[in-house]
Amino acid sequence: MATFKDFALLAPLNRALEAEGYTTPTPIQLQAIPHALAGRDLLGIAQTGTGKTCAFALPILQRLGKSGTTRKPKSCRALILSPTRELASQIAASFRAYGQFMHLSIDVVFGGVPIGKQTKRLATGADILVATPGRLLDLVNQKALRLSDIEILVLDEADQMLDLGFIVPLRRIQAMLPKPRQSLFFSATMPETISGLANSFLTDPVKVAVTPVATTAERVTQGVMHIAQGAKPALLSRLIADGEQGRTLVFTRTKHGADRVVKHLARDGIESAAIHGNKSQAQRERALGEFRTGKCRVLVATDIAARGIDVEGVTHVINFDLPHVPESYVHRIGRTARAGAAGIAIAFCAGDERPLLRDIEKLTRQPVPVLALPEGFAPEPASIRDAHGAAKMPNRTRQNQPRPTQNRGNPARSHASRNEPTNAEMRPGEPGRGQSRRHRSRPGVSAPGKAMGGQAAHSGH
Image 1 (cartoon, rainbow, N blue to C red):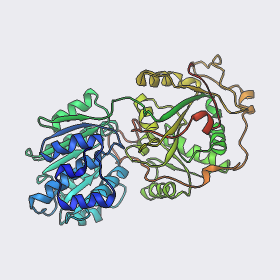
Image 2: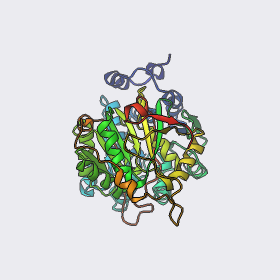
Image 3: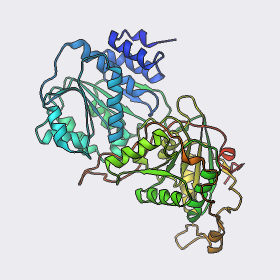
C-alpha cells in the first residue's frame, strides 16, 4: 500500500503529515501528486471531500520549498483561485497545516471584508496566495498586487466558478498570467464549457479522475416524501423533533426561503442557523461556529452557500426544495456519509417539483425510494392542479397538517459539525450575482424511514 513517504517529499512536509495524522494517500492524491511534483499541468476530476486540496498543496509546498527563490513585494509565487470565501479560507488553513514547518508566507484574500488590511499584507508579497476572483482583480486594479511572478496556478471548483458567472473575471486574470507556469485545474464535473476553459489554462495536461460524474454516494440512504409545499415546514419540524439524527443540513433554493425555514423551526422550539449570500461575513462565521461547536445541530443553506466546504459529522441532508439543476442534488447529498461514515438524504417533493425529481433520477440512473409520511401527514393529491399545472394543497388538507409540539425531545438542540460553507464573493455588477446553482457531494448514516420518523414505502412514484 502506498504511503506519503513514497512521494519523496521534503522532511518538513513529512513531519507535518505525521503531525496531522496522514499516512495513506487518497486516490486523487495518489494519481495527481506524482504528476504535479514532476511539473506537469494537471486536469483533475474530483469532488470535495476526496482530498484534492492536499493533492495540489503538497506539490506546491515542495516546489517552493526547494527552489530557494524569494517572494517579491506586491506579488505571489503560487496563486489558488477559489469560488467562495469559506472555501478560500479552508484551502489557506490546509496550506498552513501542511507547511507548518516551512518558512513560507501564506495569505488569503476575499471580498466582504475591508481591502485595506489585505493591501498592507501584500506589500511584502506572499509565497502562496488563495483568492476569490473578484477581490483578486480589485487588488490588481488598485496596483496592490501583480500576477507576473506566478510560478504555479490552481483553479479549484472550476464548474462552480462558471455557475457563479466568473468566466469574465477568469479570462481577465488569465490574460495577466505569465506563460511559463504550471497550472492545476480541478472540477467535479466536466461539461463542454469547463473543458474549453481548462484547455485555455492548461498546456498538455495529465488528466486524472477519481469520482464518476453524476453518481450518488454509496453509503447515503436516500428517500423522497411527496408533500404539499405548504406542509413542508411542519414536516421538517416533525422529522427533526422526532428523529434521532445528529447534525442536519437543510437545503433551500433561495436565501429568503432559508430564512423562512429558520423562523419556522424557531417557532417550533428548534434552534437552527441560516447561511447564504445575504449574510455578512461575521454572521456566516458565527453560524458556522455554532454548527461546529454544537450550539445548533441544524444548518439551513442555499447551494452556493454550502458549496465546497468539507463538513464532517453531518448525518442527515434534507432537501426542503428540490434543486433546478439535478447535479446539485448529487452535491447536496454528498455532504453526508463522508470519511467512511453512513448518511441519510431525504427530499421533500411538492407536486410542481415532480419533473425535477424525474431529472434527478434520470441523472443518477436510479429511482429515489418513496418514504411514508409521519402519522397525521397526507401526501399531496396529484390530481389537484392549478391553471399552471402545479399541485395545489386543499385548505382542509393544509389545516389538518399537525404542528409539532414545542421542542418535543428535540434532538436538534445540541451538537454540531465542523466547517460549513457559504456564499461566493459577490460584487455589485459581478455576473451571476446571487445565483445559486450546483453543489458538491459525498455520503451519511442509517435508514431514512427509521431515523427520520417515516418508513420506506416503495420505489415507484
